[in-house]
Amino acid sequence: MKIEQIYTGCLAEAAYYIESKGEALIIDPLRETAPYIAKAKKDNAKIKYILETHFHADFVSGHVELAEKTGATIVFGPTAAPGYNAYIANDAEELKIGDVTIKVLHTPGHTMESTTYLLKDENGKDIAIFTGDTLLIGDVGRPDLVQKLKAEITPDYLAGLLFDSLRNKIMPLADDVIVYPGHGAGSACGKNMSKETTDTLGNQKKLNYALRAAMTKEEFIREVTNGLVEPPQYFPYNVLMNLKGGIPTVDEVIKRGTTPLKPEDFQLVWETEEALVIDTRSKDLFPAEFIPGSIFIGLDDNFAPWVGALVTDLKQPVLLITEKGREEEAVIRLSRVGYDNTLGYLEGGIEAWNKAGFDTDTITEINATDFAELYTKDKTLHLLDARKKSEFASQHIKDAQNFPLDFINSNMGVLQKKSKYFIHCAGGYRSLITASILKSRGYDVVNIKGGFKALSATNLEKTAYAMQETML
Image 1 (cartoon, helix red, strand yellow):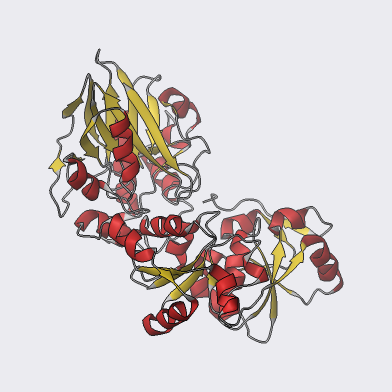
Image 2: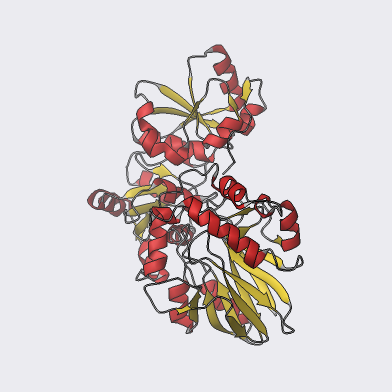
């Protein structure tokens, strides 16, 4: 028996490959199918099942396309009603691959169809649980996402179901059972996840606040629903894509998205299609020279989730500027969160743009030490902190204004065009995204390199606050 966790850091998402005696299954696959097919081919195995723990909100699953390419059966737990062929398993039903058994445990709470899969070895011993977003390491899945689609299913109602699922289906299992969750730290599907991506159930019973033995249902509901912020706006759209199916294949998306466009053609498509130009280069390259009107969202960080948080229309035409050789990576990562309308990329990059005689722009940057000296002398400077509200509440520079990147589209009204804004985040990635958006909208901005981490090393006065809400 082989168990492999396939972890994707950008989405903090874990898919799983399990193989036994020439048969394999995949749990919660990402959009691109090739890696799973390659693993099975290497093991000379046939993919028999594709198990979905629930209808995912934070990424588009590759289950339908993978089933078409391999002949595998898509499996959901009870109450799921997908718009394509799938097997809806009963609670406690058992599936076989090779010498091992998968027992279906219906564990509603994160969503109504949420299901945990219990793996048993050839002797019938419980080995591991694949929990999706029911049980995370250090946390449980948030119970408020379904309300975006069905207002009558409240977070409190789902939290109550989740309490029962954990107590009745998961916690009675042996302490040595390994927990394989669907997400790790950084995912918006929970609020207090550990950086670890697996653990024993016994350890989670000791450390996970939601599994306290003496916890009442009322306490559980209160603690699980406390501190939840608005989920990323693309979540309900991804749920519908995973629920209904009928989406383009990832191969189709890649083929169109990796169309090379010479500068003149790039400019023409930009204008005629009203496309959004996303510059995915590093945060060191972008400020020095970029195309006016383009937005920075670098590939070397949480690229796809930030596109999902900021670009409100999943059908928005997109053009890309990438570092050479990373065009396909950018298109794939966009497709993982449902942005399938990439029209191509700038062939030759900024160098070709310059040679064609088109204009470029820059964003002014300042290091933390120089800003600290400037800020100490002039308290009238406008300092924007682009971190999340919870980060700001924990500690921030005195007199800074919280301007979370997550909610930039709804908070633009607090800014004034006549003012100059100095912007920082934790390390410099989010502040540069913020600066690029504000620059494209005509604001005067300066990005502070190194963010709060660098500022904290200076003599700037900081104001500490007791944490008022759970970090997300």
